[in-house]
Amino acid sequence: MERFLGLLKAYFDRLDERQKLIAVVAVCGSLLLILLLVFATLTSSIGDMEKRIKRNEDLLGEVAKLRQDYRKTSSTVERIKSLLVGEGDQILTTYLEKTAKDIGLNIESIKQMSGPPNDLFVESVVEVHIEKITLKELVDFLFRIESHTKLMKVTNLKIRPKFVDPSQLNVNFRVSSFAEKSSS
Image (cartoon, rainbow, N blue to C red; front, side, top):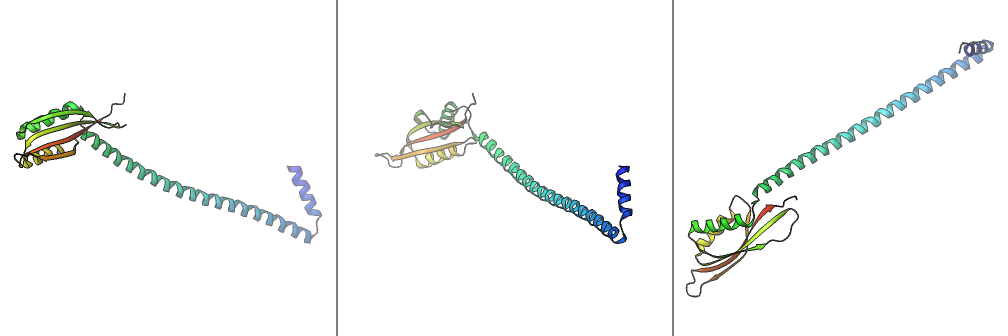
């Protein structure tokens, strides 16, 4: 390295004043150009980093929103699971018989049926037949079924008045309850 610098100094000393000035300007210009290139590279790298940081902050905001949506959905699923009956047909028929007894009704028949297949839950369905019931008793009975703490729904309600006494009704309907499908 010293040898190279010595040769460079000897060459520089042999130049006249005008050539020395041109050489100094060329070296200074080259150094300035190199400094500008380094500065431009650093500046663009910083700009790219700032863009990436901004994009990642936006993505982080989306992830936070998705996490919040997931938690909300998860709590909704847990709330729905808490409404599911659990034991299926036995609890449903027992509840219907007990509720009818509390109101003073006599259920003529309860027939268990299978609900439509589903991947997430098991639907238990019973068909209920009641004779000689008043409209008030029917409304009270159906209200108690649908306002139960566990999820039950009444479908296929068919009401026919008795021929002899139109205030007395013959009623057929289905009651469905839901239980979480076992994961086995």
